[in-house]
Length: 199
Image (tube, rainbow, N blue to C red):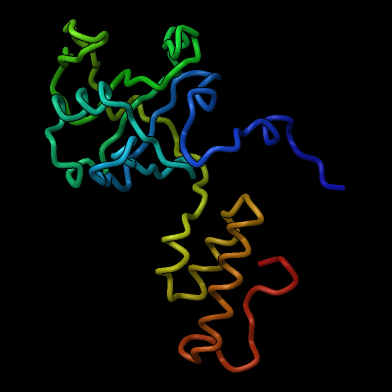
């Protein structure tokens, strides 16, 4: 039986970053992708280097990003955002908590972005500049399915396997290695770099 920390058992069964993921305090994330698809309830998906699940900001937080950084999400890659859990966020009259922006890189000073906190009423959201000195050391990154699918280097797949924390990701990597072996492009015949569930 393998021992693990109790915190490993508390991750929500969700496909995105949730407010509860920030319950221990604010975290700084580095953006690796920002994609917007019109017509969806949560149209913007932002992926981070330090976290396996994407952040899907609500409309007001998208307003903050657009005001501070402009509306072109492709320019957000490499920039950093500090997020925190605001337990005062209401849904259906109940306090459920929500993800809020505290600070951003690539701004010259404090900014107050216009938002609409309640229907028909205006307001602003205060954002502090995120200095380079404030950036914490990056935590190990969970490989994304896209990274695995696009990787054609067996040594890099080994590194991704070592970084993987979930059985699902490890299985994807093993399948990718098997596919490369079948193609006879990178792996000599009969050699499988990852065997028996270990790199």
